[in-house]
Length: 272
Image 1: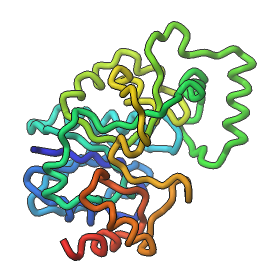
Image 2: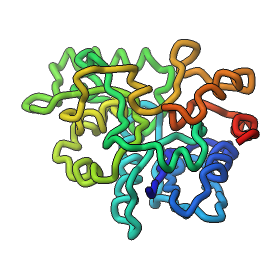
Image 3: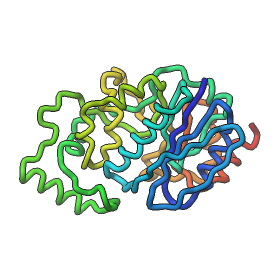
Image 4: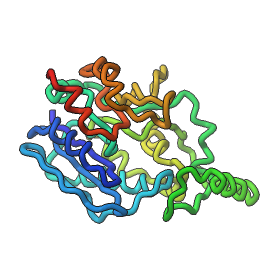
């Protein structure tokens, strides 16, 4: 089984990504990285894995459609690369592995590890409204977002008028067979994701809406991601959570997020 791990990276802390690469360093696992243009391009090393940086890079701003465009660049790079992969995985630069290398290489059997929420209808405005926010940060600027939404209501903006697909929402991190790549990259309605707000949580789910399971579990569990939204937004795991995280090693979660301390990876797998 050959795997391509795609990383949406940002910031100046490169250690977590390097530790993840070192942990999964293997001739059957390669890394494709888009690093936010607002930051210096890092240098990563591997002995067996191949590391590819997506170029040209773009500036990525939280909550805007720039994240979708960066993700699309990663998907295209994997699809066009000469080597063919069985599975592709999308993680952030603050995700860490929860599987040993051999377990990871052999764990994935289903076609799709993608989370879907039970009810996505209330998130329609994320795509139906027009958000002119792609070129600056709107994190924690909820007053501005509410103003934009009020203006959209005032002017009766509905960018989804005539759109006949089903909108779905879930975590934007996933693992899936590479056979889904043509379906995603050839999607004809990409314009609905432009100038959206938090549209990255509807991007892949909407395109693959026909694969939504009838019985829904926890959406992060469906995506094989260990994420805690109860203690944070999401919660940042530290060494104080070591016992909790160790219980998840080589189970049903491929990655945990989010983590800032790269040494946590060594502590997790010191006896493996």
